[in-house]
Amino acid sequence: MKNTEIVQTLQELIGADAVLTDELMKQHTTFRIGGPADLFVMPGSAKDVMKVLAVLRNNHIPYFIMGNGSNLLVSDEGYRGCVVQIGSRMSEIREEDGILECGAGALLSQIAAAARAESLAGFEFASGIPGTLGGACVMNAGAYGGEMKDVLAGVTVLDKEGNVQKYAVDELELGYRTSRLLKEESIVLSAKIRLEKGDPEEILAKTEELRRKRVEKQPIEMPSAGSTFKRPEGYFAGKLIEDAGLRGFGIGGAQVSEKHCGFVVNSGDATAADVQALITEIQCRVYEMAGVDLETEVRFLGEF
Image 1 (cartoon, rainbow, N blue to C red):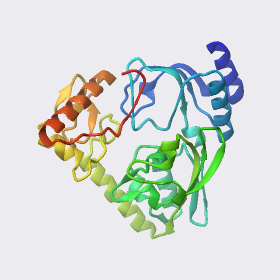
Image 2 (tube, one colour):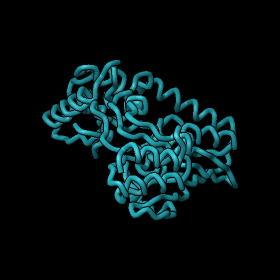
Image 3 (cartoon, helix red, strand yellow):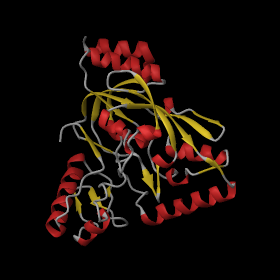
């Protein structure tokens, strides 16, 4: 099947406005970096996801599943395949008896706001994480002492064979930035979050306190992919980078944040090549100084 035929088939299946061609990925990543993807599709339901993947697999088209693009660096040449974004079209949130059932495309900030509206406590830690629920479940996202494993009740996923599976939280093998879902390459379709009734003023106060901490300590005013590196056992990545004398160090438009050395930021005109070169330099210098291998938390898409 030719590309034009594939585009037409996908448009017929999920709508013409949900299928884009040669879409610049810098418009869909928090780094604001990335060349064009051959295809960019935005399914609106679990059935849409299954239909899209069936077409892609049958035609041997490589694909990549993404959410908000908050932990992603796309190459300057883009991606020769199809990016499937599970985002705003799959972001419904429903509450029943203290449980929020949410589409995988719901932003964590949206879920936190919905929890506050229902006076449900326990999700405040995630209110400032700029990602979607699907990615948060796969990576067991966390901040300020909270993790997804603390609030998840269960997830519904599409496994690698195209079957819908439901898992309870204790079946997910959630660890530091890892899960069974990551290892098995499952696609999150929806999830249930179990929270406790709380005092609305206390929930708001905690949310505001964490927001102030983020503003004070993280470079949220600049494009980035969040924490660039995973936390090495026994160390803090930002402290190692600072001790290596790299605060503010830059290559091209990519820079180690002056505010928090654990963040590589786009100072305005960074390319993916700039970011990759800076990450490599950081890893080399930290290893030379402390003998510690820094592993990236950011995912790479395309040719590097």
